[in-house]
Length: 125
Image (cartoon, rainbow, N blue to C red; front, side):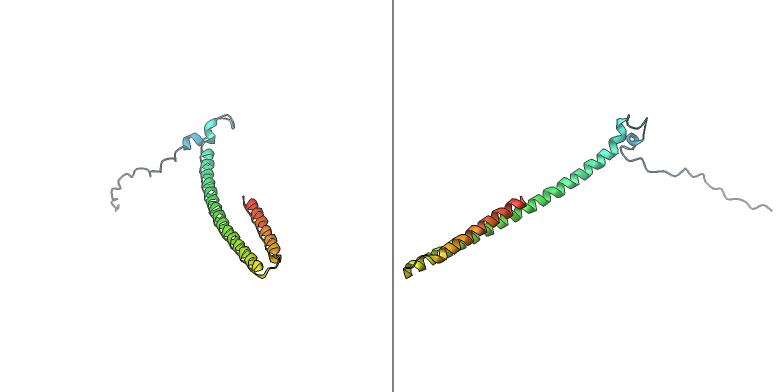
């Protein structure tokens, strides 16, 4: 006795996703090097990575500029403090009636600090 078979409806073939944009241009259509459309996808990738690198570079540059501003303000505050100390020492020396021996040392120290600051700023830039 034959087993009756159930009616199986005909299924359509599976649907595949559409090709990504630019895929048609990426398929070689002639000898290598003669068709310009083959370069479409690599150019898109290069453009994408260039944008990412430019963004990261810009962000890093902003951080460096902010750090330089912070350093410049702290160095100017330090220079102001040194000038104030020099002024107080000179007043103390005048009150004692002696020559400002310490002032020469402080001037040399301040000069060295200024030179070092300028060198550091030039190396950062």
